[in-house]
Length: 295
Ligand code: SF4
Image 1 (spheres, helix red, strand yellow):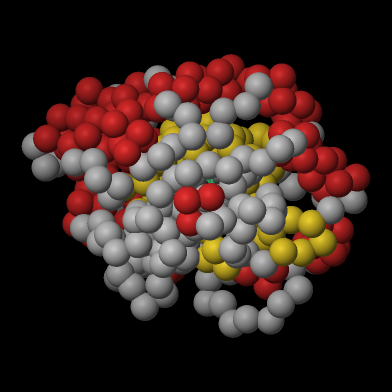
Image 2: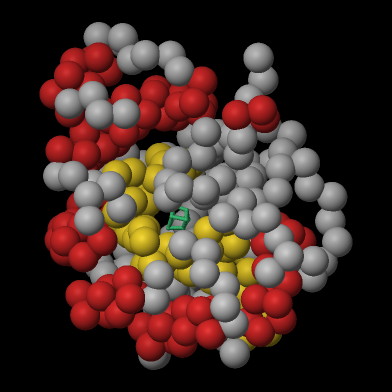
């Protein structure tokens, strides 16, 4: 079976040679399809609106590889998690299960995550039986209006309902809603979305909009770094257990705690997504390790 894997994942698995100061700690796999993803997200190079089928996702290259070969290489790596990211194509739901089965069949027992659009809850249960401990939900947009404007394949409310269903399957703390800052929402709307999601028991994995050549949103600016830092600090406070109402007050008064750990990549345990949203030359939105944060 062929899948895509991020270049960093191929490198830590010994399949390509590149120099990396900050290697990924999670193996990132992406489903592959000749035409790319049937979704039409205007920011995504995998989507049919960008022609699809190229090997970019955000600014990262994801070459195709034989899954068997990749799994072999993962054996001798220092990876701590596997993340399988779906695209929309015929049969993608069964293929995720096949990918997980092949990984488990090869004796790799690392905890796994799946990042997906809404799927049937029975499929989530099957994933769980195959060692999926955390789920990523590709909501991306902070508001229903932005979801529509950027061409998300489901309504914002559908992602929310799905994330809440997933919480029932995977348990508290294990569902990360992916949100992209800078798709056209106001900072306040973004803050409200995060506060709301945490009030529902969900977590947020924070991304910065990354303009990619060939997508309809190419040419739009990357988000303001100061605003992104505020969102990181707000997310960090919420994830550390500050009650949503209190976190809102801290945000409104400009009193969010300054903790360097807020600048780290957010998401499932062990997910560091090195340079997913930024060039290593900066500005850096998400730091892949504490040691990478300048003093
Ligand atoms: S937070 Fe990271 S590991 Fe979790 S689903 Fe998202 S990309 Fe995958």
